[in-house]
Length: 62
Image (cartoon, rainbow, N blue to C red; front, side, top):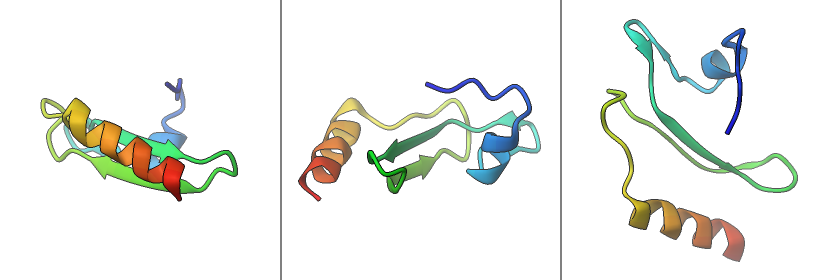
C-alpha cells in the first residue's frame, strides 16, 4: 500500500484518469523492478485473487 498525496506516483504508473483514480496493482521485487503491472480502465473492476496469487508466484520464481 502506498500514500501518494501529490499524485506523482499515480501519474508515473498510469493510474490517474480523467474521472479520478484508476485501480492499479503492481508487484515490485526487492530491487524495485516491476514484475507485474495491471491498471484497470474502470476503478470498479479488480483482478481476481487467483490471478494476483499467480502473479506473485511467478515473480517469486523469477
